[in-house]
Image (cartoon, rainbow over all chains, first blue to last red; front, side, top):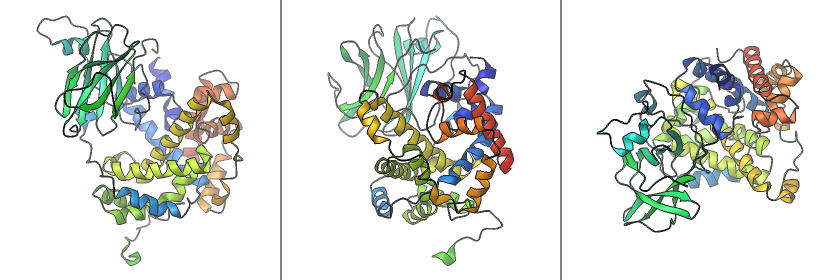
Length: 239
Length: 201
């Protein structure tokens, strides 16, 4: 897709008329295109006008229900300025080629600095995935707050998850990684720590069609239980 | 508490909200700190606007109520993420509401692909029955008149996308247009609406 074509998506983006793949692609573009950001902002104001003509009061009972519900929910802290912090030096045209199941959304986007392919010695396996020429990534908002981006490279045969704002796992529990293969979900290690973490998925990617993060009792599980924190699909053909 | 309300200094009141724009931003900021009263004021000022849009997109009243509740819970939870430098409080709120409504109809669609009988019985709300309550509003009349300045094809594409929750590719197919044309019409329609109403510049 050319820059011009991407640009033309601003209107459709403003009215949520992009599918998930296009939306991810456009948000990656937005992060690097001030002109598109300005256009989206001005079209958002026009979009707002459309909802002037549809106002309908909800049933009176809803007010009490919502005010009761919020007592049970803690407001999230402000987001740190992660986008500005991570403005990419070089844009490699990589595109999130997959759709998260149900957990993608919220309009947040993360751009990580990605450099060209490198087989330099001394790099960790995770670095080699992040720098692979065929690396693809999928970003998902996590069910309990925070964002995870899964990078995967067929050439390296590995996947890496990078989290931001990962909340601590409940006590006595850990975040466990999974790769989805034909035989089912295969355990692929753990995320240790909170906040910003980079973790390599254990095991090769061969035959993997997606990845997941769940919360499991300490020590992990052989098959995923609940809750699911994130699930993402690898879709190598979607580009 | 009404006598303690900030006096709007020549600010316009966003129609259907009953509160001046600066007040909404303030309610949001206070909600982020856990102020339930501020959140209740925000709800009172915006619930008709949010619910009306959700109802228009989702159509099924029971599902729409669920979505509206989810929207306000999300607002409570994520109020700290509102960034005044990127747009108004109302724009933030309505963007969130629209996204959720669209997510709901698209998820339902994925289910109904496997169960067409549900599909046929669940979308029975007549197209325009939900918009009537807003007819009386002055600002809504102004928007309607601006909408009437769009070409028919622009309006069609824009309404299918925004109120129908369809992707631009689906809109193209529904209107028998080449892929790529619908997104242009949506964008042109929004630009025309923006210019007619003198917003966002």
